Length: 309
Image (cartoon, rainbow, N blue to C red; front, side):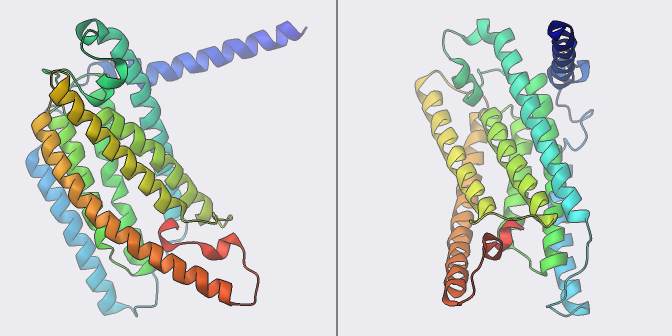
């Protein structure tokens, strides 16, 4: 009797897992993907620079327009839109993470005969063999990640409308992220698999947390979003060191020219982030000290940092 109940459940679970594997790594659209300026939307240099310029212009214009029309202390009501955006972005990040993880495993299985004497599977995640072309499963999910960066831009609009602030770090970080994800595809750059895995994993947590708090549920007792960003920065630095060592000591990595330019951009983003992090930590300590100075007891919800909203 127990066997009759358990067996169909196992069969249904196996079917679901098989279907997920197919749609995440074996679908013809994924297997046959090829990055092309004529076939892939948003794949031209003109589109890249135009979209970044439009993003910066709209953000600056909207900030100045609201400052002229509305009092600085008044926010624009958005209702559930930011919460729904956070939920959507969390689900997209989980999907990209699962898709590129499964796709990377399949690519390693199918192409290991070509590079197994010079690299381990972990090294392949950081360092593509020379001659790699932007096609196939991994680059399909890299393309999806590139497109998802444009959806991330809405966070800036929400920040301007709700908090009436224009965060320069946010503008710089979003622009650099789109530019770097474009370079990954254009030059079949090494390092992108590890970077996408780390970024989407962190974003699935960050946006899930933002949705959680937007629904009015209890927030963490520490700046969770900021700490997740610190972890992501640490992972990126470690991956860059790994690519450097593999390229110069293990026979070379594909797209190293783009990687060098990518590294320069990352250094700039890191410096801006460190300045942003120091200022936020100082604000957080002041807020904590003020709360501790009050005689009223307070909960974790009162220690919420603005960036975690």
